[in-house]
Length: 296
Image 1 (cartoon, rainbow, N blue to C red):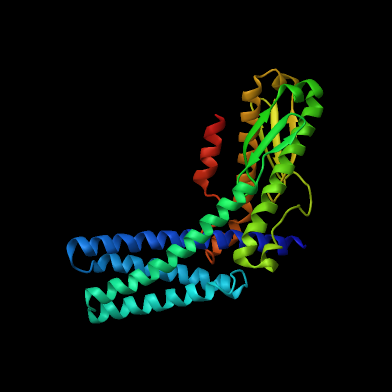
Image 2 (cartoon, rainbow, N blue to C red):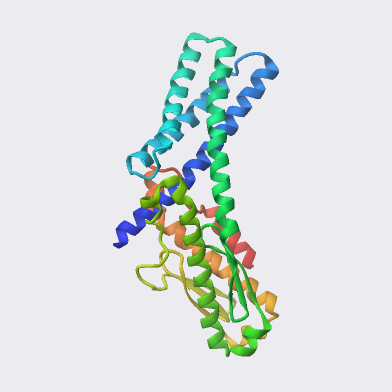
């Protein structure tokens, strides 16, 4: 797959996940309107303006994803419901519709959103349940749904089996395997939502294993590099680092890898985020700051 095509595929996959987060935000605002309405026995029109704006944002991103062929045919119903909801709310606010009619319209959309959210939550749960930790020569690695390392455990077996150079290569292999396995698992689960063709666009290998984002700990005792897709390509462990307590060494490897991967994702989705077509994709600067703080 060409570099530009892979970037587009990655952006579309992230955009689909972001779309469902926007739906959750809209549903939460809708619940607040209903609670206020039932408590005050009158329509909170200022909150309805907020809900309508969130619904319109969901509709615009959903329509863009639909036009790009990311969403499956089942999403047509949800998008049409959003369109109808916006129209009904506007008419309600224009004509001061009766409270009961507005509640019925909100309940109908909320039910649809709840069903869609429940489906996505189950898909994510299935993906995480299917993702076993990677164990490689005494090294255990776990990654999240985006293939970002969450934990690294380096056992005595690995320390006894390798020199510091060999240990770095073994950790690299474990990180790569965990990353690729999680990406493949999530893509398989997402196939139920975005369709087989779209799911097959998920990246399981990089087009070039070149280190583009490198994070280093201390005075260079430890470093982790990832390529432009966030796939780990190198871990360098100095003799000094092998003398650290093994839990400390594992935590620092995981922290460096996570920071490098988040930085790669932030950079890859920057052009799409600048256009705003799909809303915010991938990590934000606060996520990078938190990853840096964890290493301090």
